[in-house]
Image (cartoon, rainbow, N blue to C red; front, side):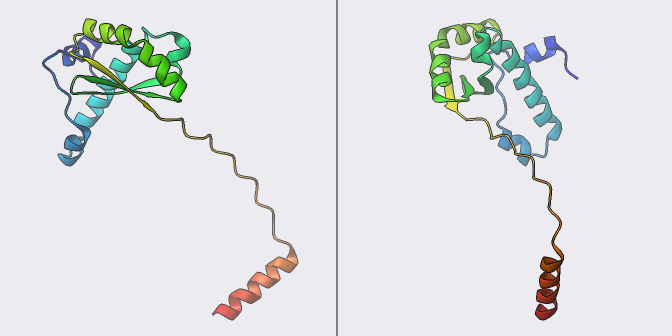
Length: 138
């Protein structure tokens, strides 16, 4: 597992992340895991400069070609994040990133899955009808 200092060294202005597609196509799963870990660490560091209500509604997604990409749970939260652009970019610069742009995309959270209702047992009549239908299909 990489230490914080080694993760920080990965975020120098001269370092560029490899696109995920390149990593997957090269079968470099360890590289993919390392990239995911580095991005998660970077996201945690950048979210510290945001107000807590805002950081709960947005998440860092990627660093691509000098662009910090965030996902917001709604258009309203995306707008609020855009208002903090200067703050986020300054934090990125302090981390040694050459980020010059903040990109915010709206990605609502997936709906919470509903627990399945317990299956009700078939009545004797329904069971007989299904059994008869199955016999007729054979």
